[in-house]
Length: 417
Ligand code: ASP
Ligand code: MG
Image 1 (cartoon, rainbow, N blue to C red):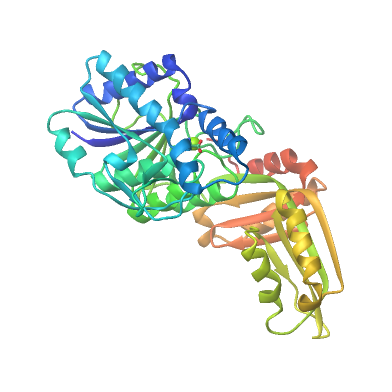
Image 2: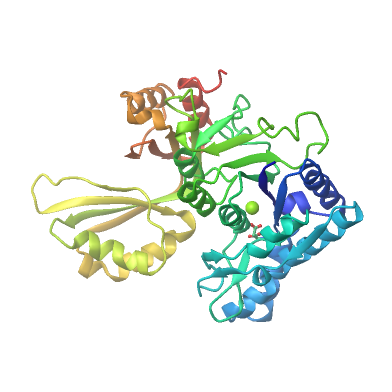
C-alpha cells in the first residue's frame, strides 16, 4: 500500500456538492488501503472575499490580522470535508496549520514553510485515519497563524508530501493535466504523460498557471513525484483509482522520462512591458544603479538585454517588467536619471513573452533558429530574446500571441502524438 497526499483547489471544493465529489475521491484511495493526507484550499472566491474585507476594514492593515482572517477560508473547507467524509463512513479528522504544526518563518502574508511535524498524522494512519489539512497556512515563530502567499496551498501539499514521505502528491484541479500549451489557444495541444521538474518549473514561471511556482521548486528539491489530475471526473470511473497509471500528468525526475522530446511545451505570459534606456553610460556600476532601486521597490525585472557599445562610452539597456509595474518603474528611473546616466527612456506595453521549453535543448542545436525562422515566416517581429539551457523566451507584440503560440507548437511537432 502507498502513502498519498491529495490536494484539492478552490474550484474543486467550490460548494457542498463538489466537496461531496472530492470526498468520494478521498474515500476511493482510503478504501484501497493507502495512507491518505488531504490538503485543501478555500472554496472558490473565498480568499478574494476575505482579502477584500481586510481592505474595507482598513486599507493599511496589520499582516498578522490579515493572516488571521484569510487563513479561515481553508479552515472552513477542512472541517466541511471531514464532516462529509465521516458521513460516508470514512474515519477523518481536520487539522489547521497550527495543530499539525506546520512551522513557517515570520513573513506574515508571504511566509515560507520551515518544518512540518507530521508525527501525529502519521501515527493516526495506523488507525486508518485520514488527515484533512488546511492548506495555505502555518504557525509563525510569534505563535500566530501565517499564510503562504496566494496560491500557497499547492506548496502546503508538496511540503506535506515531503514531510510524511509520500509516494506521490496528487494535485486535483480543474484541468486534467499539464498540456503542451494552453488548449484554449491551440486546440491541438496534448496532455503530457510526464514532464520533468525542471521543465515544469520553467512552464510555471513562464506563464502556465496550473501550479504555483514555489510548489514546483519544492517538489524538485525534495523529489516529490507530483501528479496533476482532474477533480471533476467521476471518482469511480474506470482507471481513476489505478495507482500506477491514473489519468493526468506526472511531474518527476528526468530519469523517469524514457522518451525525452527536444521541446516539450510552449508557455506564454501576456501583459509584459518593455523599457529601454538609451545611451546609458558604459562603465562599472551602471547596471547596479539601475536595477538596485527597481528591486528595492519590488519591481520584478525579467528579460535584460544590453549591447556591447561600439564607442565604449555609451550603450542601450532594454528590459521587461510586468505591465502593471510600468508606471512605478518609470517613476523610479526618471527620478534617479542623474545617477543612472542615460539620455532617454522609452517604453512600450501590451507585449507578450512566448517561451519554448525542453530539456532536450541541452543536447540539440538549432532549436532557437527553428523558432526564429517560423516566426519570421508569419511576419512576427521579435523584440527581445533570452535563453537558458532549457528554454528560449521571445518578446513580441501582444496582438500576435495566439499566432506565435500556434506556430511554435506546430513547428516542433507538438500537435502530433
Ligand atoms: N486560498 C488561497 C488562495 O486563493 C490559497 C490557494 O488556494 O492555494 O490564494
Ligand atoms: Mg491554486
